[in-house]
Length: 110
Image 1: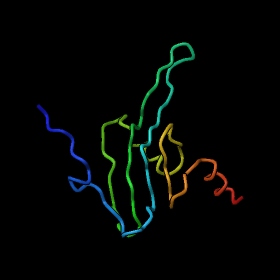
Image 2: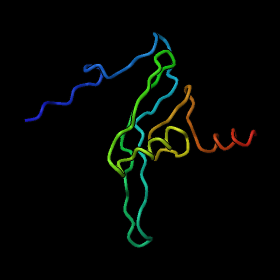
Image 3: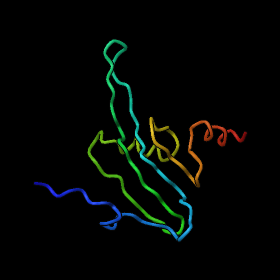
């Protein structure tokens, strides 16, 4: 029998900021789904499934996305950059949702 999955905080994989510090960046249960196929026979492809992470300004990190071809690395990167919106879940920078429309406004200077 396999061991039960431990809480991330229990195994030391949760990184916390300073007391009272708001997260710089949050990915909260993000899911990205694509419809693939034709109009008559389409199916759903889940490219990113329930991904969460939090980064704090006081605890800078470098991390790597690694995985097989087609595992969702580029999709997750596009989500983090605001180039793609999640099907469900939230992506926030300084507490504000990152949305493509707000990025387009910023790029145009309006």
